[in-house]
Length: 110
Image 1 (cartoon, rainbow, N blue to C red):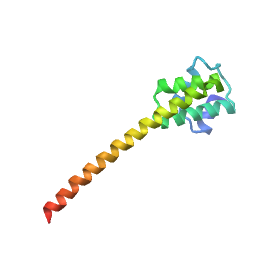
Image 2: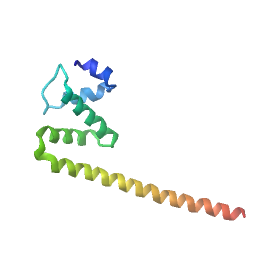
Image 3: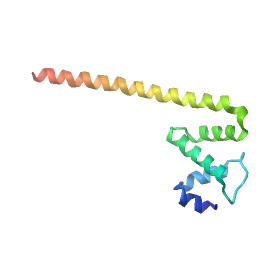
Image 4: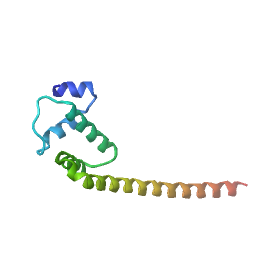
């Protein structure tokens, strides 16, 4: 499949494919196969999980190196998970504070 076809058929943004093509640790492509689509899908998922460009490049490089890097990739995923949990806890605290303020106003009106 050609570049234009994968962008259109799989609804991939061109900037993702550009980024993928510019990775110096991957072979240059003019045709894309199922493995490329899996890699591009992984990139999209990592972006959705709030990995930044550098983190994604690092993760993709490790993935290209194979199974020997599984522990490093798992560590990266755990770190991102911990960051997400911290954000959730912070939002929970904010919600509790909002509720306290809201209840104070309700009590004042009684």
